[in-house]
Image (cartoon, rainbow over all chains, first blue to last red; front, side, top):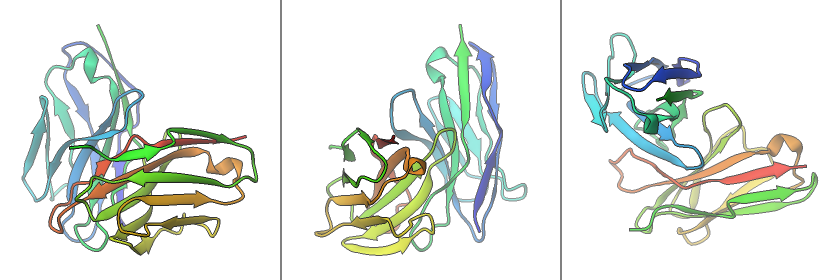
Length: 113
Length: 114
């Protein structure tokens, strides 16, 4: 079956630090990959996505590259802000059947001034 | 453009009671999903509708759970004889075109079973 493994948190960084959150996946075929973000008290929001190998998704200074050879989709940001404090979820959909999402457990990021 | 809405946002119930949640998807979206998220975990898929047809159900969806989408618009999720283990955030998401793989999530309904 499909699965997503992401680094466990919590992660605490100082403002302007570099962020990496690791994500690896197991899936048959060619899934689409996503990063969702959940800010305190809010619902899940799509942060970025990539639909095929070597695609780079980017949004709000965050980036992730679809690496089929390493089955990875690591999230990076060069300089985090306090407002980036949230829980980040890596997810995949098989792009077949119901297109249901399989999520990782989430990584809580806290950015301190 | 209104997003996905869910009602209620919070529900506290006693063990053994029945509860029902409602989801209103984005109006032009014909695909609708329910997920469950427990504390410290990612959301887990429960069930999927295309129009009014329920096409897929997870093994997580025990026989105490039932979901409907009678007219292909809003959907309801009912839990009968609630148990403390049902305490979770119940998320609804919708998706539009056949080739579009992006799902849009509602704010969720937080259920607490005492």
